[in-house]
Image 1 (tube, rainbow, N blue to C red):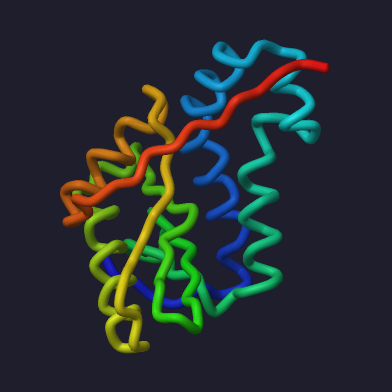
Image 2 (image 1 turned 135 degrees about the vertical axis):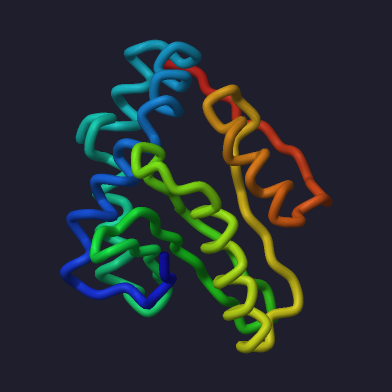
Length: 159
C-alpha cells in the first residue's frame, strides 16, 4: 500500500469510490429530508453526485489530492485544502471497504497531516455529519487524533 499524488487517470476510480462511500450517507439524508427536498439538493442523482463533486475538485485543484494504491489498484483517496492563514482542511475522502486492507484511512490522514506540517499549516480541520451515516467517519477522525469539535446543525424547510 502506498500513498501518492493524484494523476488524471485516477479520476474514474476515485469518483466511483466516492459514490460508493456516500451511499449510506445519501440513504440517511433521503430518509431524514424526504424525497422532495433530497431531490432538490441532489438533482443529478445520489448515485453520481459525490463523484461529480470529486471531479469538479480534481479539475480545479488536482495538486490537493492524494490516492492510496495497492498493487496498481486505487483503494482510497483524500482531498484537502490549505489556506494562507495556516489552516489545513481535510475534505472528501474514502477507502475501499471491499479490498480487505485495514488502515487505509489512517494512512491517508497521516500523509495529509505530514503534508500540512511540511507546508506550514498550524491547524487542521475536517467537517463531517452527526447522523448515523457519518458515524464511521467520526470514529476514523477520532482515531487519527481529532478531539476538539464545534457542532452545528443545518435546518431545511420545503417551500
